[in-house]
Image 1 (spheres, one colour):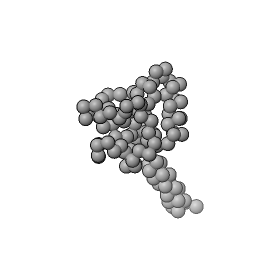
Image 2: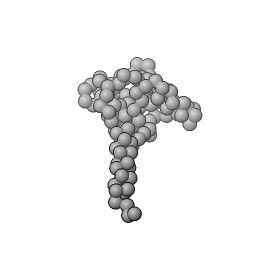
Image 3: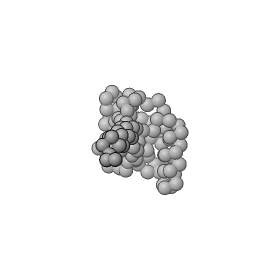
Image 4: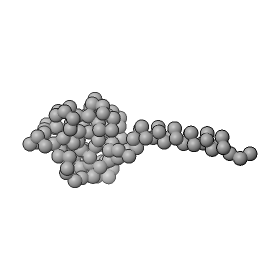
Length: 119
């Protein structure tokens, strides 16, 4: 599992809907994005891809005191940058690379089991 990558408006709408069903005013949850590699250039940690979609709150990201590098949902169901060491909830998803790798390994295991099965 990795922190969730919200890279499309459709995925954001799904996450937004789930959060609104659970939280009346929203809540703070870490996402997978940060700008630790280059100030002001936000990327998704698990894929390395730059943000092409974003859902920043008004006047965000603001780099408050230059210590805010990680992205989270905040109380208004919008994104904010915050210090990466802050304690808050998080939203995870299965990493697509690992999902593919697990599926590939399961297929190989089945083939090996068939190859060595006793008749």
